[in-house]
Image (cartoon, rainbow, N blue to C red; front, top):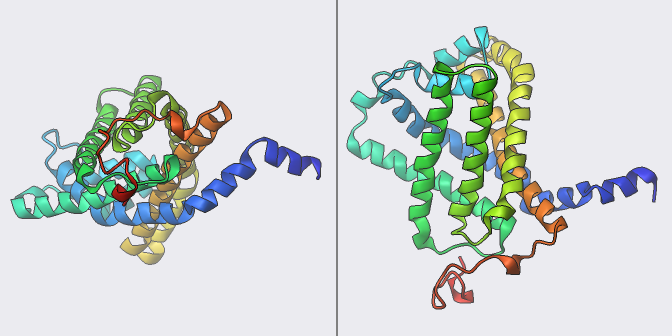
Length: 276
């Protein structure tokens, strides 16, 4: 075996690649992006339009997340804004349906974490956890955007990174029904946040000029394709960060048997018959 091959195996990259293929990481990232655009984005548009502070609507949320500026930000705003009349035209039934569709996105993320950390899925009646996670996700995105109006430079960066680590630390712990210890989930949260920082830098270098050229060449469709590509990157980082955290824990002796039982003995989540 060559030196590079030995380094590939000893560094853990070979195992990471194998686990990523078993998880179908790329397919999960594509599913994440599709559900985010189809089910989550309309709900976020309503929430952004209802913002009492009125700081730019959903277009600003995307501009901030992708770290866009200038012509690229204007091209994105032309597609996703303005949204000031959304709340007035969306009835209670429409908002309820959007929330219901948003739960499918939360369920997909929950399933991804379950595939990474344990072989069996939780019982279907844990849907309330998906609803709570979805609400916290929207609150997290909202506060991340709003910090740009009160902070800038290093203070905002530190606050955003701290909030991100807390969210991606709490999220898997809550969705997995506390079946994985908090300490084991911390490396995944740190890896996820580091990946999102790298994706933001990549977006600034690549997606900023690409969005302008696509908007000129293909119009709104080209803009949406760039946003979808960015969402694929977000999904790849979210699942990939959790997977890296799992592998790091295994290197320090983590086993599935160490996960604390939280259900009663008769709960279907712990019995073979209760698997989904």
